[in-house]
Amino acid sequence: MQVLKRFWRQITISLVFIGLIIGFIFVLATHNTAIVNIANVNIREGPGMSYAITDATNKGTKVHIMKRKNNWLYVRYADHKFGWIASWLVNEHNTQLTKTTKISDATIVIDPGHGGSDSGALSSKNKMEKTYTLRVAKVVAARLRAAGAHVVMTRDTDKTVSLSARPAIANKLHADAFISFHFDSSPEKNTASGITTYYYHKSTSLDLAKALSDDTVGLPIPNKGVAFGDFLVIRDNQVPAVLMELGYINDKADFKTISSQKYPNEVAQAVYAGLTNYFDTH
Image (tube, rainbow, N blue to C red; front, side, top):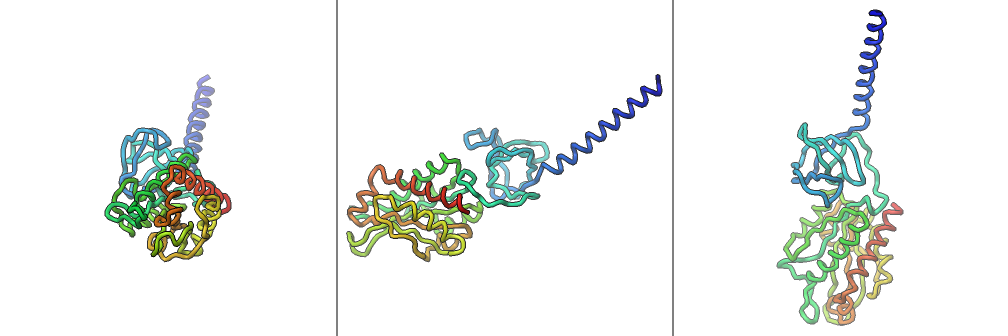
């Protein structure tokens, strides 16, 4: 009887030991580590921007990935703390980076041109470009967020943002796309009209420019197509980047459309469609 008890005790101990080994292997195989790549990243109660912020981490913080949900990671950090962090704000180890293939996986930087002390171009009635770029950008950002995209705006109020700071945001985030919104102006008012989508780096940005331009064809302002443009905000970008001139602010007909209530929504739908096509084919 005693021999039988010892036998089953040894079996039990062996099974526990084997279970621990299997569990350890499973942890090694499934739990990756990552490094927070920007300062002051929020830790949240759940996998989404609507959840409460419980903590924040500094750039360079190492986190252990416990599980994933959509574009969010449940992580262990500071040895004994746990929470949810946005996957686009960390650099993962032990995983191969995959190319974004749908808009809901994308990080998109939206840049409303000008702002603050920089008014941009003026309409014939002295309406400032900066007002309308921000107006459009907010509606575009809302449309893309509704589709699941992570959207970062270079400004969301009437404030001054340096030209160099704008592409720096996209570069730091390793964004999937950067779109800068502007309104054109001609030397003489009422002499030019149209929408132009500019790119600088052909290898990274031409396809994005074409995709966005193709879907602006249906807008009430004529589409002038794609063109090369030597603008700092797209020249200094390491990610696919375009600058869209969404009409001439000093043209009476264009400005009537630009200042209308429905134009921002029309632009937002066109940008959404263009980005959807872009990510579907890349």
